[in-house]
Length: 163
Ligand SMILES: Nc1c(NC[C@H](O)[C@H](O)[C@H](O)CO)[nH]c(=O)[nH]c1=O
Ligand SMILES: CC(=O)[C@@H](O)COP(=O)(O)O
Image (cartoon, rainbow, N blue to C red; front, side, top):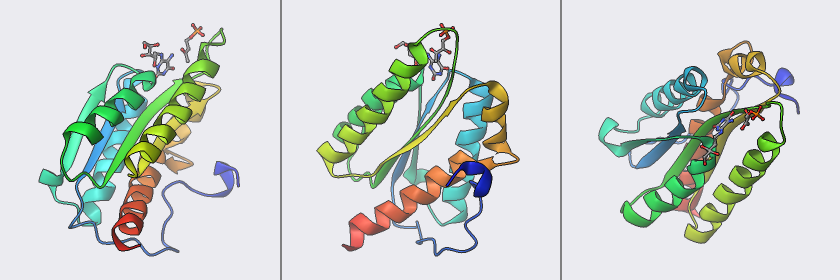
């Protein structure tokens, strides 16, 4: 379903697990900082709203989306008791094929890290044709992908803890 058919911040129809027992990391890329800052705020506020304690949210900035994979691997290796890692970024199409390489590397990379550690690593990365599409999905008319990423982290952390 395309994003314009489902608001990224609308979860009124679903049950969200209590996050009071979870420790979650948020890795956020600094490229397109206005956008990723809004994604981060959405994710952080959503985690707090659903009971995650401030002291159990680990925030880690990285230079760009390409570095999200390495950061997730480092955090899952070095941080004891992490229940999930949320990866936030914004990749906007430029004039070259660089966009394609970054998007594929990040999607494949964080998938592999999650599988390696058997932990939820959430793909909260906007991959847009232009800046307006990113703005629309970082607290604009289509909601906030950071909210969606946080809800996904809570659901998957609950899944892993109760399966
Ligand atoms: N163009 C964008 C980038 N590029 C930087 C890469 O992510 C990476 O930091 C660099 O290639 C060095 O390894 N990053 C984004 O997050 N968004 C972009 O639009
Ligand atoms: C996604 C990117 O790396 C891209 O924004 C960089 O722009 P360009 O392809 O024009 O170098």
